Image (spheres, helix red, strand yellow):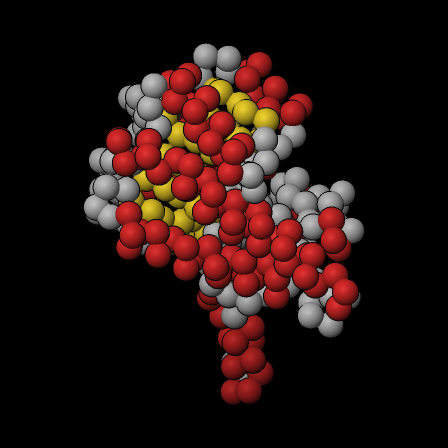
Length: 274
């Protein structure tokens, strides 16, 4: 018996990275899964591996018609929709205000907010009638940047704070029929890319020493993989275990909010000589 037996989820950006890990975990917990994926090869790989349990649609999460197609295909394949997971996103690779070319700020902002915020809103809108019918739930991928500075540049950080606001507003609007929550992971090796406006569309997040960065910054002092975050999505999608939870964001970023402890203790030791 799994936590999500007989449930159906739709996940955007489910072809790789965290999205793929969520797909695999939902399948392991008994769910059937629809996926909206921009990359045709990644979509085909999912369908080929799980032909009876995954319905992958090639499309753009920033397009309302594509979100509608994904909802229709998922319901046609599996008969219902219980959870919409807005997950497709991009990072700005920490591009600071000083580093942002003035003539590119508008286009970079539109790209990042278009996927990270508008894409979630469009997906939620497309899924809402089916979620109302099943008293289902919505889960958005936030980020440690939805809580703390330094998880990206000003454009990315602002987009993830906006997602936190979106979780709360939609939870307010859609209760009591539909629960709305978020998951805020930290860093992990993935194929996450950046905006074309900043020439970052071909640079994957895992081209950086991610494990070293996470170990250095996290109080838990260990590398983290995408699958390590997926339990939070399962919990929030579970009717039995999250029935009282809406408007929340599960912060599971490895403890970045208390990451200053070791530096503070080092300073304290140097000052008082212990």
